[in-house]
Length: 382
Image (cartoon, rainbow, N blue to C red; front, side, top):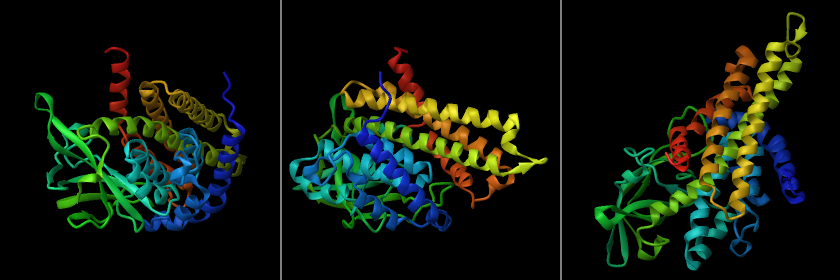
């Protein structure tokens, strides 16, 4: 078994690391504090091909694999998670549903701009009364001639209201299936469609430079051909997208966890207390050693899930384990890094302050830790 990265993957990782250190790090602090979306950084990532990493070349992508996206997310999150989640959501939730389930016409119409980062896509699944119970969808879509008429709302949707958002794919009840169950389908809604409205940005604890909105649909009409995939399979389609997304979020979480180690090691060498660098004291050494062990273990977990995914093997359990372990590592490392920094760790001018604010959502978004435990237990036959 070889855990070494291929030459291509290592070259990509190093390129994104360099970009994150030289271009993201110097500007993200001010953008974060002002709550500004990083349009210039997104454009640069688009020019680098990051938004098209796992998308076929015929649709404007790089023709790479999903693991390449994960490596990019890890390196970005070592510096900032707002930028990383913008890429993750733009690819995993915005572009990949089209790539996996879209018709040829849909792919050629929307994917090229998404693959180059010229435009962003979003996916509207969660609803104000739903949360983890995604099957509790209340948004409806009925066919009226050759149009879908959509009514309802969605909550906590990333990339939905930027100046470059082009589409939002939403799940909606389109009828009643077997045994009276809801028939849930996915429908693509272009930005600016009459009857489709996005709220003002949420005031969030973290991810301050990412775009998160509530969506409202009031007799919103889109063409019938905007149905994505098979009618009635929208929920099942999104579950498969979530499995991939959980590996990506695990990679992002590892990045944050490793960023906490990076910052803590640097600070422990520079900061002095009682006449010595604080890194010379065993209490700090052990804390940082535990942080490194968490990041390393979490990385192995998402590598293992990604390996099964790329081989075409079932990986739902491994994705859940990776997401659970990595998000826990991110939260624990953010707490410990703040402690290493002491009072300075509570100041937003330091990266660990942002890391602390950003870490908690990783235990919630794209499936809470409780949901991951449910999935793992289910695969154990419980």
